[in-house]
Image (cartoon, rainbow, N blue to C red; front, side, top):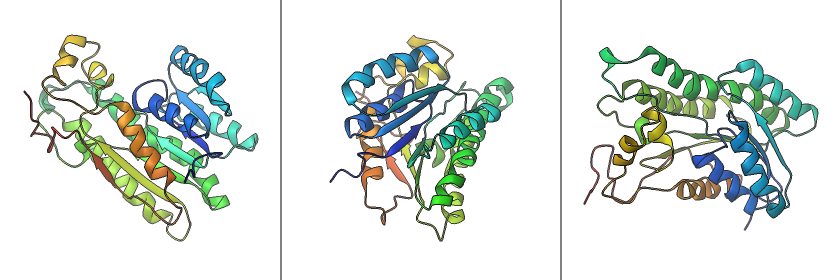
Length: 256
């Protein structure tokens, strides 16, 4: 049964990776889309790809989730037009740098904290009250296996993803007594631009992260998110960990 068709779904970080794959998957299911991301050129390309083929309502906006004022303006414009999202996919997130804590770059720290935690908070604070007011909605936060188990030099990234997990649990408690659902999806190794961003554009170093095994694709994660969103409204997935078969935890990966 398709319970996604006709829903309005807001996806942050929609211009690439998991966000773009979610946009394609939800469009194929007949959902109306609101896509936010920082990169206008990427958003325009995705809109051009989806628009003619999907026959669904599609709007895009250049929104940096770190900018609370910009988030609020974009959310207010949606609500004023009568477009309260049925589903919010808090996907925008990143890793920046891989260093021991005493050797880390505070600019990397700020980038991760401002995007992964404060960005998620900014968007949720702008959208969730409207879901609560009409007693309908679903928030899906994209976490990570890094929010379940720390690894060497992951320190601040780990802390932000542990924070996402705590926020997801807290949100579920805060909306108790309403039909609002709050879910989290925690992927392991997914081959996207993630490692390239972490290593500040070093593509060769990024490739080594996924060598010797078959990682997840962004489409794999999008399929999982679609499964969660499509469940009956009395069913809420609190937390779902998805890893490639070769990965058993953050340390144990079967590489050939």
